[in-house]
Length: 598
Ligand SMILES: [Fe+2]
Image 1: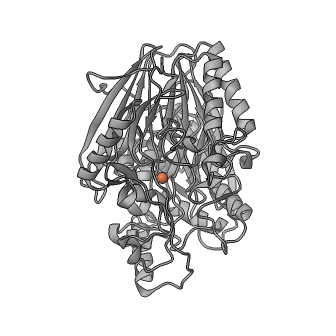
Image 2: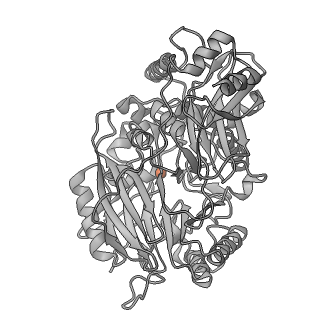
């Protein structure tokens, strides 16, 4: 029997009591700080808010802001010759298809600049000798000087390298990869979520950046957090800008810029294409289509806040921009005959508000995807089944599996709060006849592997409908005391028959190694995020044989695969740079002439 988790409000913890700023306490972190507590075998979660107060900067806050700005600025804005560097937010790529990929950067230019041109080059080699595509575009203050190009005409399943040029400077070299087509034997996909910059170092991104054997990295949401969170800035020495909670377009732009100033984040974007979806914190905690728990009275119009957050997200993320983003950013990707991937939007596309009562929660009309997305997903599943693609992956935000019974649901923000919608989802899978359905989930700052059933608590559940594999966070907290974390895990494993394993302690990512015969999932973790001194390791490895939907221990971690080289770090010794300097190859024609001469 699963114990009821109690939702409470308006409690203050010792952590809250020492807040001096306008910080709202983070409901999620209650999982770590106080959230899962054990009272006579009951698992209890506490959720609460503190009031918002807009206050002028204290001297301490001013010093933090100045120090963090200086720290980042000094390392990122100048090159060895002392010249201003416009690419201080790095480069990124995303949403690869078989013939195209999004390339992204952002220009930091002298104040007063209204618009600027930017050149881009794509090559097949890491020293940019063999340029195959190039172009120029303009950006302006109207899109916060972000630069995004959808490079077409590329070959499938191919690694490319790219650079940008602007204001007489060249960016670092980025690396990306198109999706394969036709017969595909093997894929490596990594995914993670919940990267709160104030909570610690992005060592997980660092680990991902060093792996050359990934086809793509998925980020399943909470890429930024909206909180002010000055206390954690102080504790970890990590920057956050602006210092107040993000509410306007300018706030969200500044917050994205702050995150993109992190070197580990820059490095993982530089080395791998991303496929991203937002969760709630890209706007505000526990968001739904018409509001959020963390959008409170006195914070203005939800519509305006949402519009600013969405616009900044589309500007700053390497995502192919939908024509109507307010209808959601759900989309699909095909990796040849091996994998179909659907990326869902369970937050802003069509989610009804989190229920207040059990009766409301059980209403048949309630949706977490919205009817349009539900229909789209159904069609995706059917198309996939008809095309005989082996694996169906669904990347999304909140846990699908039941963590409580129908009488005692666990968390109304997860699919547990939308049982009718979950039933329709399962029906779609059943109707399409999917034999290898794997749900990839973020949000909960912990690692889980579960089998999916209509009712996992029934005596005879039959063959699972699929499996759910949940990634730990990049930095956001689970349970920071390992003993308590282990007790929590043991208790859940005892009461959830469909749970294979759970861990609340470590941060990390999930690696999927996929062949037609089996999918192997490995939970790779880091043991520390308080500094850059950490040890990585594999926490758990599980395998699902094709057609079984059953999780079994894997014998070994998968070996590193031969892969195209990572993009080199910036170097004045690159041959292409020497030629640019010697011959003045600042132009596309000059560069191509140089390339063809070799
Ligand atoms: Fe999160």
